[in-house]
Length: 96
Image (cartoon, one colour):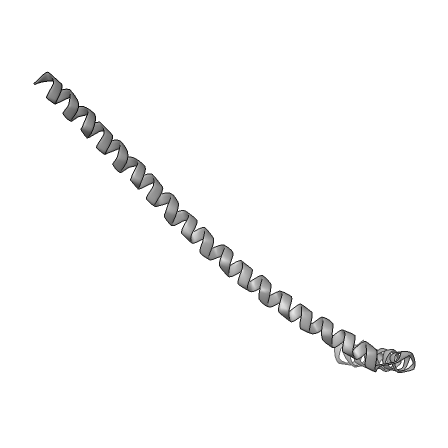
């Protein structure tokens, strides 16, 4: 009977160790699954940002090919004029 008891205890210990190991692996799997979801979400966000940036770059490239140097100078002058008008309006509104 001693042999049976020792075999039983050894089997019981192995089962408990297997259950414990399974629990650890299950927890780690859940953690990795959550991390994977987070990373997938970040990748999707970055892809969206990349696409938006590429579209902006295409627009800038298109704009720069359309506007020649003289037009750029005129555009800068017009923008500077608008900025001065805005500054004056702010100054008037603030009472200075």
